[in-house]
Image (cartoon, rainbow, N blue to C red; front, top):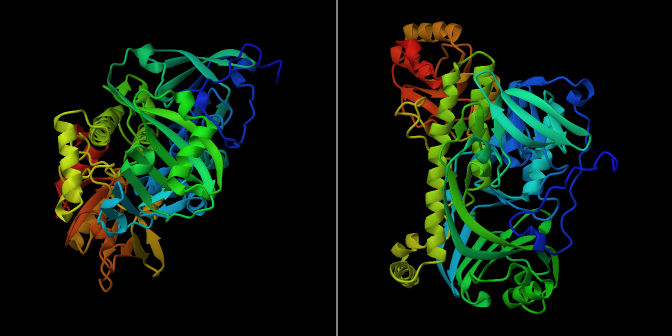
Length: 574
């Protein structure tokens, strides 16, 4: 390998990780295998090429493998994470966990990670805000918890193993893309490896390379960006004291010069502590071990024994690409947008990007939908990206307000929150991420665009199932849920539609209703109906990414139109 690696540059650190300290994390290393193109000299053509084996890229690769879509994933490194330097993202939302359940890696995440639902916010020594997400209707029905904290590289490693187990998607490590072009026939990528350079072509290319994506320049993509002067130092530590497994934040921490602090428990009994630093802080100085230990001692006491697993500086910024699709190229994850981490809206958004694009690529490549369906990826995920940038920017301004009106508002909000419960909603240390609604999508009706929680129901034999079981049974097709008895004529129309369209249908009954269809389930507590945002005798058209495309009451032409629209073929129903 040493001879092969001549001329192949190592992956470089970004975001100040060159100043990191601690013993770091030990991560798996994956072998470089010589691509077939180097052996044959031929230019191979692939349906999908994914560039970047981070959270978004691996989620997409695993989803495509589930749908049976062949793909190649290229990554310039030979491991997950940031070469073992950092735990990176740690908070994974219920929607992401539901996606991972569908992909077959959730159980491993649940065993390794830490579940939490309670968050508390302090100003000085006073608690000024708290929440329990299990009490919120947006979270309380799913089979998955509101949040699990786990180091990002664990999830990436689980996804790698699942992709390998499923087959159909080739993972190529130490394969760096050096150029990209596209035309009406294909996209072309130049790739550098330790064994030499080669060229491949693809129907579709997905850029999941992160915030320093070279593809932006190659296609001339414009970006709306905002760079602030907020500086932080992250410490991943183990220590002898045991705070509660809750999300604790301080807006004005007395042990951090009245600056903000975040405190979370992750897997392996490691705590993530984020300290806000002065805007002119020297990243190398704030990351020195003795400085970090002094900072931790002020918070937890000099008698607390501390093991520093990793420590490093970080600077937050926000940016959003103006178009998430450029011809055959799709941007996702941090390549499409970068947000401050407040509310866990970074990596979770990339996971949702991948889930959204995967079923659409599968539908188009497997002949179930026209290519126009792919346009809806930008419509839906760009709306989500802009929402998340907006929400996190508001939090950033609350945590580091400009002098004048912003400072006045924050001080007033904290003063009121100390005394009056009504004011506690004004305290903004991060609005926790939820599944973004789609209000501007050309493939969702005005009654659709909402996520469906992974709720439980009863199969016809009385055993328990969840929404993801139905989606896996549908195998990439749309799922029509018919609640109650639509009548003999309605059932006949459904049967005809199932024969004509890429659609599976299930009748959803109460505990004592008589079934009219062979494929039926029971919803004794009404959770499935509630998750689909309908009531009484109704129907809900659910997409493979567990979003409602449309709802209605009667089984008539509206259902046909909704199916066509959800597949990007609205004109075909007219």
